[in-house]
Amino acid sequence: MDKHLKIIPVSRIFTDISYVVPIYQRNYAWGEMQIEQLIEDIDSSINDSNKNYFLGNLIVNQTDNNVYEVIDGQQRLTTLFLLETYLGMNLAKDALKFEAREKSNRTLHMINIGNKGELLEELVSVEIIEGSQIIDNYFNTKDIDKNEVRKKLEKVFLVRVQVPQGIDLNHYFEIMNTRGEQLELHEIAKAKFLEVLETEHDKKTAALIWDKCSDMDSYIQMNFDPKLRKALFTKNWTSIKDNIGDFDSVREYVPNDEDDINSVPLIEILKNKQLLNNGVSKDEVENERFESTISFPNFLLQVNAVIAKLGEEDSTLDDKHFLNNLSWAWEDADRAKNFLYHMLKCRVLFDKYILKREFARDYKETGKWSLQRLEKYSDAKGDKPKYVGTFGDDDSQKNKQIRTLQSCLRVTYTSPKTMHWISLVLAKLLENESCDIIEILEDYCKTKVLNSNFEEASGFGFERIVFTYLDYLLYKDGYSYLDKEIISPMRDDWQFQFRSSIEHFQPQNPVVGEDWESDDLNGFGNLALITVSGNSKFSNLPPAGKISSYPSIIEQSLKLKIMKELVTLDDEGWTEAKASKHKEEMFLLLKKEY
View 1 (cartoon, rainbow, N blue to C red):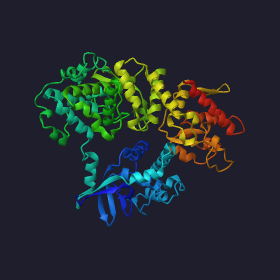
View 2 (view 1 turned 180 degrees about the vertical axis):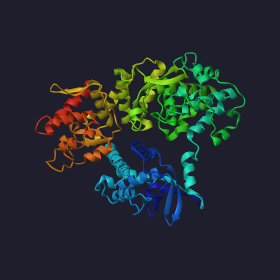
View 3 (view 1 turned 180 degrees about the horizontal axis):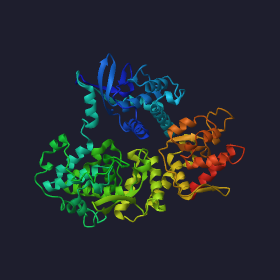
View 4 (view 1 turned 90 degrees about the vertical axis):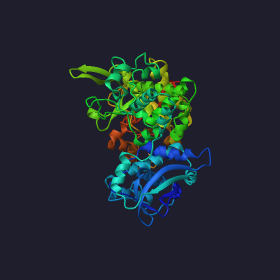
């Protein structure tokens, strides 16, 4: 084996080894989705076989005996440090350090010695603390056996790559993060599709569809040059024209120039990563306003699932076997054309009917949920895009309801491989664009809630969908108690946040007061779903203290807002009797759906 490469089991990645993250790298930034995806990959990768599983590369520069500077892979490495610390594994004293970042180092040391949470917030790295809490919450919620995960880490490997001596590390790191050195799987898939197409005109059409669809953060119409946009889309730009019914009808409008990139051997296209010039003028380029729910590779798997659903089959959204999942589609030219056309069609429907995050005006920094379609308007300078509510006005009842229902699912099923609701909606829209999306998604949620066996669950055993769908119902219909309106229907000042932490309103380890019986403490009436950071701030405060100290956290959950009102209803505060009655009423709301 190359002396610069070493295959290391993740279980021993921190054994007698120290890693230093240099100052020119960004701080730890992984959130719930990335952390949970890593744990799921580890937990599920070798369930069905005894084969080893590779997590990827860790690129380093050795600076001393058993001391390595991390060039690429620090987000994954830091998460593995937090995971192995949580699992109680044997780590070197200074297994991981950040150069010139005392908060990060203080936090890592605190976590390593088991004193998490004792320092003031201004003295610690909040991002690292939250990462640790996400791991803790995930294991509690999923009821995962720590010993099993420890065993699996012995069969999960990283490839540690030593960079050549004397290299300019700042320059190398910059290249790694702006261009990338590995061929993306979706680029390999693109080459496979192009290979089976017979003519240069077909190849050019396929490459054009592929490249326009690959930019997920702008509306697909704006990725085409004005001439093609006019040819392919309706007069107001909102839909594909009726006469564009297959791949060949798209090809009719694509210029058949011989002098184009598809005359170059495919391997050269991939090496150089050349793209077709999309011909969009600077005036038409959208600002970084929208963020897609999923990435382009995950969108390809969604299209694959849509085609399978149209044939009354099912298809996995797991990207672990990405190329195998798609391989049927490049077996011959007809299948390739069918897939590529559906990709374009699905992309138009996706932009129009699946919510995004929008970063504009008052939400330029934080973002908000957006369900809008692109529509053309004209002024003295020509045709331009505008964004209007998909179902009438952006603040219309129907648009708000569907947007909130989709965001309910988005924050519940955060991993792309669990977002089956997207392919379900797209498949129904392909069959009939006038289908009832509310009915489709409410039925999907009801089935998930029912299958969770929520009436028998307790504590961390409740699935997230039970909390999020309940909050959707409270949002939709509102809630009153003793003739007092606590939650108004369709309120404009509330939206779903990424919440994953089950909060015990009456704490498990109260600072003051008596402990509750287990059934009441872990009953649904005493629980709410909030953010990890919110859970950390609530800590072991009594309910009254949580209400007075952190009103913004109370607002994260409509269920929790009801619980707050019950506390302030009289002088008794939060009692087992109130929690029990609240549970019965919330269960009645959920069961009424059936």
